Amino acid sequence: MNISAAEGKKKAQMNDIFTKKTNTQKAWAVFLFSTIPVLLLLLFTYTPVLNMFYYSVTNWNGYSGSKEFVGLKNYIQIFSDPAYFKVFPVSLYYLLGSFVQIAIALYFATILTVSKTKGKNFFKGVLFFPYLINGVAIGFIFSYFLRPEGVLDTVLQFIGLGEYITKWLGNVKVINWSLAGVSIWRYMGFNMVIFIGAIQSISSEVYEAAEIDGANRWQQFLYIILPSIKRIVQLNLLLSINGALSVFEIPYVMTNGGNGSKTFVIQTVETAFKLQKVGLASAMAVVLFIIVLIVAAVQRMFFGEKGDNRI
Figure 1 (cartoon, helix red, strand yellow):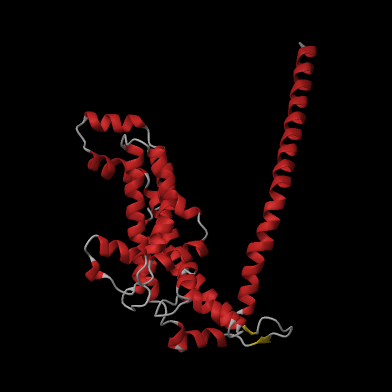
Figure 2 (cartoon, one colour):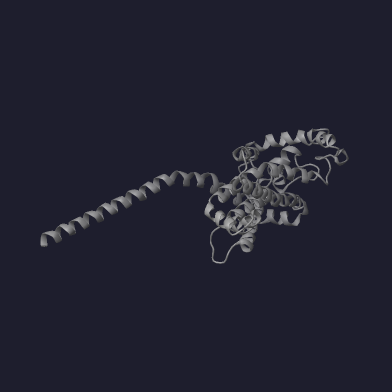
């Protein structure tokens, strides 16, 4: 009995040593594998952000070595000069477009996932393909598509709607709607793919039970699909709103911000590189960053559930 007790105690000690050694090895593996990504994150994300905050309280032209500390002068100039905020209404066009974009993406994701449509993978690829195209290329493509007597005008003329032809990129009342439409065309596929992944995670048994109970497609969408992917809808909505506030590529390439299409980001870039006011431009970027945080907080307030800390 004493020998058995001693052997059992020895085995327990060996197990403890083995467990501690295994845990130590796991800890080192996690540390080593995460070191490089964390260093890259600090180097290319957090360091530039901290520099941006520092530049925002200085007067710097972007290339000289000296930076004059001016405190909150740049921020005061932004909020006191209406020229810096008069471009924000342009973001409303993209904001409205983001809701249309989400609705269309959710529609196609539901149709291509739940229904028995033939060639679903082909249509998924076709709808997702615009997201893979470079933004500059899309800008050039639609510049030709929307130009006078271009493809769109030719199609409208062919189907008998020539009376609605206008200068899509020259009419101040239409230009931002045109650019928002291009943005919807480009990013809708990205939202659709995310929705498809979320919808596919719903068990088929749930649909079968709903069909047995007599639920139609609309009721299945309203009471099964939508509640199940609520978090993904919120995430896509947040990404779309943030994109609407920080849109740059499409209006910059297609119009260079002309005819009333200049966005806040385009103005920030022009302030930094054309006017050589990097300090002021950094302050504008900080303001945009704060606005995005406020939007995220408001969205969480309206769509988040009490006691739920997830996105």
